[in-house]
Image (cartoon, rainbow, N blue to C red; front, side):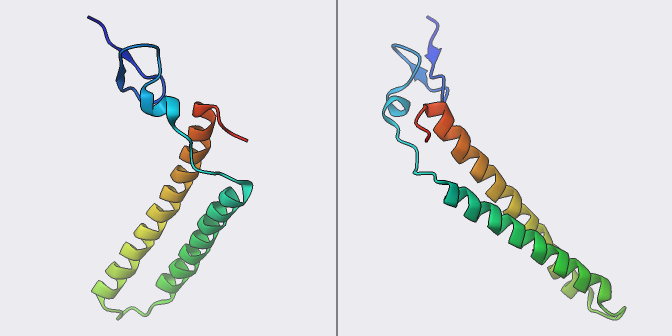
Length: 103
C-alpha cells in the first residue's frame, strides 16, 4: 500500500494531501516590522564582525595565541548567528506562503 505524504511536511496521511497538523496550523504572526528587525540584527552583526576583524589586524605580534583563537571563534559564532537569522526569516516567509495564510 502506497502512503501519501503531506505536501507541507511530508508526514504520511491517510486521506487527502495535507496532514491534520498542517490543515489546522496557523503560522506565527509575521509583519514587515518582524522582517525589518531580523534584517537589522543581521546588519548589526555584520558591522560588529567588520569591527572585530579590524581589531584582529591591529593586534600586536605578541598577542597571546589563545586570545586570538577566542576572537576568531567569536567571529565564527557571529557569522553563524547571521546565517541562522537569515534562515529563520526565510522560513517564516516560506511557512506563511506554503500554508496560504500570508498577508
